Amino acid sequence: MIIVGGGVSGAALAALLAKRQVCAAGRVAVVAERAAQPPLPGADWDLRVFALSRASERLLRACGVWDQLPRQRRFAYQRMCVWDAQGSPGGSASLSFDAAQLAEPNLGHIVDGRALQWQCWQAARSSGAALIDGRSSAVTVGDAEVTLRLEDGRELRAQLLVAADGTDSKCRELLRIGSAGHAYHQDALVAHVRTARAHQNTAWQRFLPTGPLAFLPLDDGRSSIVWSAARHRAAQLRAMSADALGAEVTQASGEVLGECTLTTPVLSFALKLQYALEYARPRAVLLGDAAHVVHPLAGQGLNLGLLDCAALVQVLGEAGGPQNFGDYSVLRRYERWRRSENLLAAGALDGLERLFTNADPVSTGLRTVGLAMVAKVPALTQGLARRALGLSGDVPDFLARY
Image (cartoon, rainbow, N blue to C red; front, top):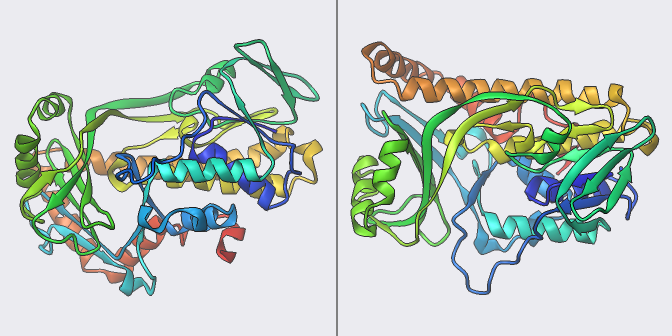
């Protein structure tokens, strides 16, 4: 099997295939343009952090990654509070989630991006996968195998090609699989901040007319912010001094955690909704960001990609052997399973983004009434939380054992 993409999803897939004994050691190749790099000793938290669900935690346990993550680079949070800019935390236009109400130890973990990618890469190496530096230049699908040609002329052949090479997937392009979606005309700004008040092991998110501002708690008392702002507003924020931007974050958060002080530089990236029109072709499949990109307002992007990995491993494990891995009928099972789940998530997140960034009176009223109604039905709020944790929905069976 050839996996193109050495990010978290691609490397975790390689490790999981071996741990689940779906592929024999040495029968998987991971092709990446750049090898993962280890975190530097004493380095600060990476600017990229991920909010990982229980399902993602279980998958990472299954492939031997979770226990290798440094404890100071993963932080369990207990609560989450979401509110509209027109209201206040705990008010009628807010939602609160608590792990205790779900009889769960936490609502998930905030994990350092560099540490996670490095440990997934190490797990792929330990599984016996061949780690190959290279850039894809051509894909040829035959009756018996698929051939990946690299820019330096090397060719790799296998029963199945997995495209896990990100948002601008070269493999998706080479397979001539189209995509649809739209730009949000927003940039997400990320940084770490120290706050005057403790984060209380709580993830906080305020919906502003120009986009949501989230605070993700870190183990050292700081929070990682993700501020999705209209592009012109994001440009203004990026041009500010650290002190001025900290003051803007304080005001935009409604001072929920008091004064905010930046402790890192600011990173930004453009936001869009994108989904592949197909996930499967004979001898080829897409997963992760190559298949779907969603708004980060609920932190579900990587979680969806890791569920893709688990679903593909389960489908291939039931295929009757590696000789059947490339059969379109087998790969269509994976496509039907994950495409429907991912489109449902993408549509829900897109709808939330549109509803909360629309300032007209009708949308404002709908938000207030809707949040108040959901807050009054504990079974509904708990259902939403369990879905976000990956404890309900069409989740691969074997994850429940971890």
